[in-house]
Image (spheres, helix red, strand yellow):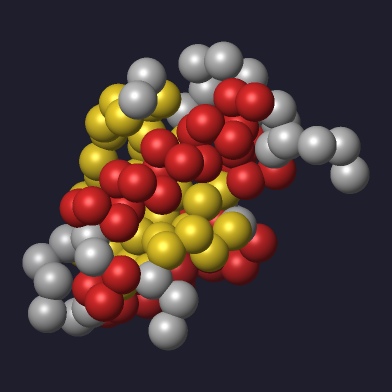
Length: 112
């Protein structure tokens, strides 16, 4: 596998910093997907991610779009119940975006 692009490295740091700052590791788990996770992102690509929070968190399918250090972030927020509902829907609709991010993406914050 080739070395990650410099932009992929910068985007990974931006995603990690946002996840750590906004959602302390004890509140949830953050997964990074897409071209940033594979190391092939080009300048301007967004960092796609999924953050799974505890069940008492209100986020259940909320989408966050932010720019951190010049990197656009596109993050799906779910509590555990909301994630379960989303994964069930993705299986029914054969559209596994969140499933693939959680299953194959990089765990970047909140490992327990």
